[in-house]
Structures are given as C-alpha cells and as structure tokens.
Length: 108
Image (cartoon, rainbow, N blue to C red; front, side, top):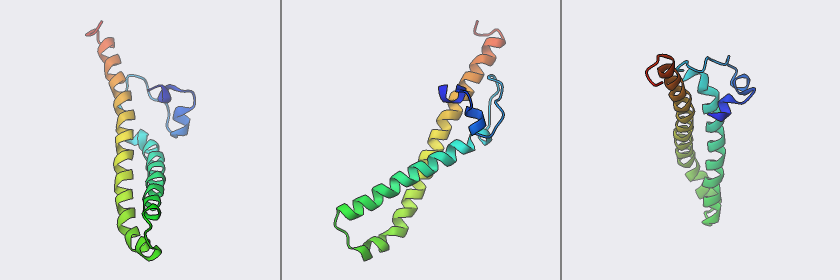
C-alpha cells in the first residue's frame, strides 16, 4: 500500500489519484500488470534459456524447445503479473472499504 501512497505513484500509473475510500476496478492498475508481466517475462525467459544451456542442450534442440518454453514463460508471466496486480488492488480496496466502514460509523 505504501507504494501507491508514495508521491508520484499515480502519475507513473498515468491515472488521477482517487479518493482513499474509493473502491477501484482493475483499470487503474493495468500499468502495474504490464510492468510485472515484462519483469517476470524477462526473468523466466532467462531462467528457461539458462536451464537449457546448463543442461548441455544442443542449439537445434533449444530452437525446437523455444516455442513451447516461451509459451510456458508467457503463461507464467501472465499469472504472476495478474497475481501481483491483484495484491495491489486488494490492498487499496481493503483500505478503501475499511475507511468507508469507519466513515459510516460502523467500526468506530
């Protein structure tokens, strides 16, 4: 949550900072997903090719394994990116719901 509260965080997301008690849909968090998809994609691609090279795989076998391996990398990067984005959204919305309950006088 601290990352979304940091000065300039919403400018990086190219979104106007919402009210702290506003429950948000996925849309404002899409840049977080893209960043994490790229990050996980690069790391998993390096891991995939690193494992291929470390296991003494021949270059033609690496080329043969690449489409399936990169498909798995893309699927995993998508899953990890969605999960991290979900964590940011859940954190923001959890606080927003808590603030709404407090403002309504239910949790005072």
